[in-house]
Image: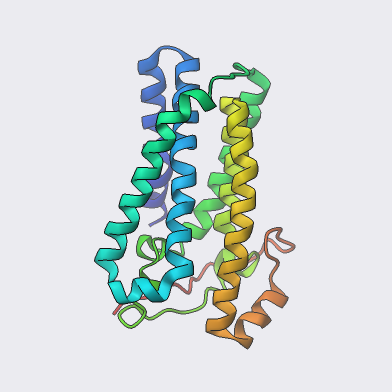
Length: 232
């Protein structure tokens, strides 16, 4: 299972990135390509979350299929609009900086190794919100073990850390600005998500919050057994 996770989430994307960088023959082209992807896709990913979670009651009535069709179309439209204006946003380029590239690669590797832990516990269907959209067909349990025994939001820690690494690697002011916006958006996501979990789990989640820190681990030992959303 672990080897499949490594191949799927790390090795294949890394090889594709190297292939694209090699096909461009120029590092600057690769930097620009990655910066464009970040500008176009990151806000769209947050839009996906903010369109679904605050209006979860409405989407449950609409159904899973129509929810993903409607929300995906809106997010694709937003991504396309950002792609159109990305040239202007990336007009100012700080250029390649080797020390920043090295630091960025190390930070990305750190974020990915951290992310590997929570991916062992969450399925793809859980990540895209199927248990929330169709709770009757997908019973759930509160994650309190594995990496979640030492930190409450490992996904968001990985994202916020990884974005810093990529920002250093591409070195565009617009991407540095995107990092700040991402941190703010992630914090809002965390506040909303924790409110949902308190409403759903009550005192059980309150006790979990009192025991486990939100972002910065204080204890690095955990039980590797996982408690995940399960489907019948």
